[in-house]
Length: 99
Image (cartoon, rainbow, N blue to C red; front, side):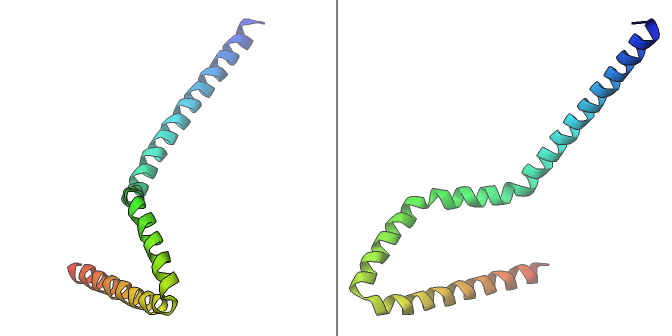
């Protein structure tokens, strides 16, 4: 190889190395941004997972209750959905009034 060819190959290599460094930096920044955006969801998921044994026990109790009184489970379900909707409405009203 002549000197000019080696120099152009070295320059091309340096450009590619700089491009890789820039891409790594951009990927790192995107990763940090992604973690910041998804942090509330991660926290909520961790809370949900921490209650897993309680959910399992509650499911067992509900299944036993359902076997004993199958008709009452539907009325309890309706009451639970109504209560949940009421709680969500109150939460939305409170957050709207804070703005």
